[in-house]
Image (tube, rainbow, N blue to C red; front, side, top):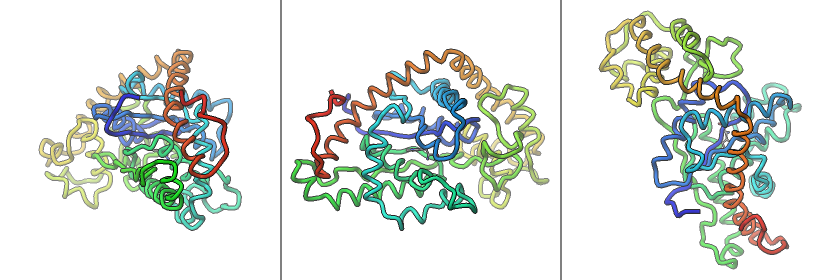
Length: 353
Ligand code: TRP
């Protein structure tokens, strides 16, 4: 691997129906990270997807759709490593070792598990419970230093830091005996932020934009055409007041805040900059401008996704190439981890060459 200063890792679940929240909160930021002095790895996390039931007849298409979104958005598969998680066995292997480092008490605090498991917790998969441990393995198999994610993943990133710290501490003697520095695993930096760290439903500004919302008008799907985008923006819920002239005036106005945040993220501006143009405007005017901007940015992205999806052999070749390059980084980490833990293993993993 070329010597980069930073190693960036992030993932998106292939659970169907990518929407504006996935784009602004994650994928668009992944593209921007490529400008840094960083090796970037972008992973389609299929092992995470099956913590909730996925129809096997649909899953391959969903994996290719996320890959297509990465490429269409501007992730360059020659510069960044684009792959799907299940092709790189070190994720699941390291997750098992981390299952033995993480504590039940830590996982019991995870709010996403509580939300996703719902009332019938006894019937949730063991994988759903262990989900954040696999996420730590994703990140630490590459000893990633920076992880761009949406606001909702903050707690999982804290768990990753706790697992790294406990591993470094529990095995400190063995880490030193094997000639590694004290911080075998880095304490990863979450990169959360931007105007659209949380994109909310177009029908209810207090709820996250979600693929599982029964109303399709609540979200803009990345494959929506210009007419659908325009219609959904025009129907988006608002309040009766005109727009304020600065961002502070958006507090207590969740729908206005959400639409201004979306506009800002699409425009690469701040809320304040957007409001310096539209402060005092009625929503009818602002929505017109938002339709124009959203169509300009999203319609070509959706069209390119459709073009890529029509050629699955190309997508599969990108994923296979990415998986080989990812494994070349993860395999030596796993060899070192096995030595540190005290396992007997066959010589250097063939995969590390
Ligand atoms: N849990 C993340 C999400 O749903 C996806 C994910 C899995 C991830 N592994 C990761 C994100 C590692 C960042 C790093 O958004």
